[in-house]
Image (tube, protein in one colour):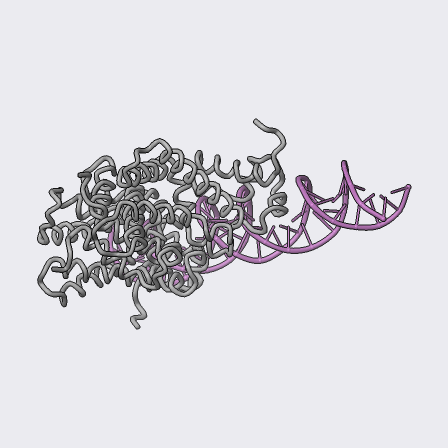
Length: 192
Length: 192
DNA sequence: CAGTGGGCGTAGACAATGTCTACTCGGCTC
DNA sequence: GAGCCGAGTAGACATTGTCTACGCCCACTG
């Protein structure tokens, strides 16, 4: 490991690790500082408030998700619909593997803390989805932004409700994949 | 007002009111007790832990949402698709008017607290949706549970991402209604 | 009717948390 | 070399969730 990264990065990394191992409830400012090996006042030099630190951790989560998506798209076939499927798969896997981070990323009080860095995170993801939807040319007669928005929302809702635990109970499924497929097919048409 | 309801109900009502006026961050156990006019130890006689109290408040939110939906369906036309539209409208309005309660209702740590009362809340809503989808008979060749689940997820994702603030920014819309319509049409077909 | 037991609320303690304010210390510039 | 400033430490403070001891009052039993 690199011993010489700044404390700011170490705090974000320690928070992400803590989130992964102990869950969102363990993300106190003092515990993060402890894991980073500094006193409880040290984070204040880099983040004005606790929420700002959490927002930075969520930002790292968005960066991670973005990296995974671009990596997956690089290896995906050219047909737009297949690329949407690849994106959706990564999105669902991310939410399933890192539920704590996923929850943190979409907490609304993190935006309200006036963190502009987070404000436009997630928008590149949406722009990418608009491009894919435009290329897929669904014949629903709607603006691509609306179709892309509804598609994202469907995908997001599936993984959210799945993590929440009601959908597995209600549908009897043990995997969200059929629901993700239903969402994509509903908006972009069947696979062929 | 009835002066003689039990403290349990008064705590839930005070919490819901506090949630409405001050937001989710203000929902501390002690503040709820203060608003209910009792000492900070009193809630413990009715709720073992803070999370249990929050779960009860969320349960009241589910009951409220259920009431609004059944009231709306009573006045809705008979065509299944129109009934789904009515349900979706209520759902979206609820999320927009009571964002704090909506967020609380879907917090996942509330379920993990082993509250069985909350565990099956929301399932009647889903069963209702399955019935409506079955009656609407979409020709997607999927089990009604899957279509209903994907539909609920789409609806839920729209209002969630809308409250989150990214969708308005990304789509340029100032109302989630077109997205809700896109979701319903995608899963149940056009209005005619 | 006396007594008693338990439900229900109070009051105080405790550890932990987020924020604020000295203070310290090391390296930098003039 | 003197001053200064960024960065981390240490302690204080109010607030929170939980726990425990206590008191009250009403219903039931003998």
